Length: 139
Image (tube, rainbow, N blue to C red; front, side, top):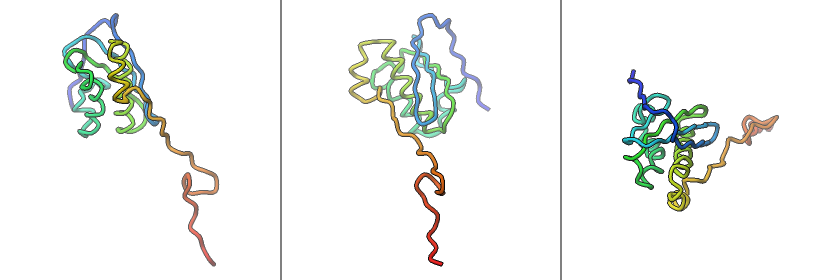
């Protein structure tokens, strides 16, 4: 089991952002620091094993060049790993916009402040799934 990541601070000058994707919700807190990232008390590499998910989370920090200047604390719940990484990305982007208002044009230009509204379609009555009907039987 990996060791718990704790980022010290009082939280007085933190910037907050909420990100959502599918059914995942991420509450993000950004404060001046050395570039540490804690997700549910674990490191980024420990929480997201997949490189694609890690890159999605780091995208707003790398695009703005703030990766080494801020510490990021994330509480994420719901959904799966892909939804959680997308929620973290949006939450970090929104928190960075509050942290430094001059970053808005960069974040908006890279489409990082747009919420992905795609959700799972609900199952309909009389069908197997949302659109999958039962197999046709001639006799």
